[in-house]
Image (tube, rainbow, N blue to C red; front, side, top):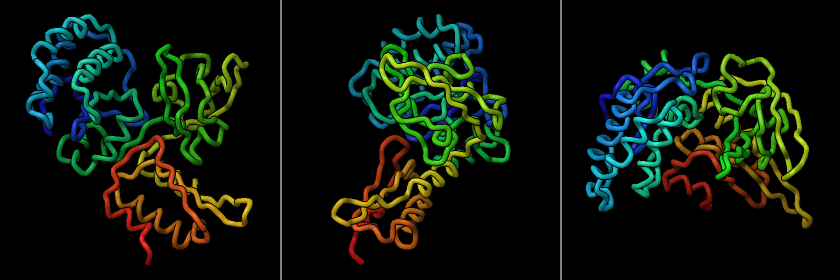
Length: 300
């Protein structure tokens, strides 16, 4: 899906079947989180997203929605947005009217922007990838985790990628992230210009519990390499009381043959080769497996 985007939209990504990242946004210079917005520019971005959905959504009837009426309802909110984050929230609320999965607008302030750009890099090389990431290498500053934000705006750790900086620092699933160096947590921008330098994360491990201070050193994360290394680092045998050994591996992404090859290697030659049973953890991360990958479990 190729679109011609207004200048500010070129730094964002609309995920329908593919995404469209079209601005230099690498690990060393991620964009500002809350750049000033203007009403005309905001409406131009909303209109570009609106037209992209109108012209390329898988259901030409848009589920029976009056898409023009939806645009009219959200345009004033977009015009009133005072930051890129606020504008993205308005546009994602508009997209939510479709009640469709895999449909969202991502900004360079989100890890998903870089991760999806990497997953779809083969397609995007013909759609401006080099403008977004000179040299075609996609990286961003981070610590290697997935988070979820609740209705009250609290941020919780949903997944910790194996052997990434967050895991090495001791973060656990369920931790509430309170601050980074005393400032509100931002999954990319909290670590801008901090790659290789320790930062202090304040986390709460239980409701009402005292804050814990954890030192973590952000890295320039390359999504494919991070997910592949995380898979290999996760592999282990878990002994049971009856003498059997259960193999475990966490697939943080299944979007590509490389992950299947790595899993097969772990099972055939690596630490999982002596497993009596196997647990494949697919929580968090990204999908993308094709049915033939189930051949891993066929008798040979």
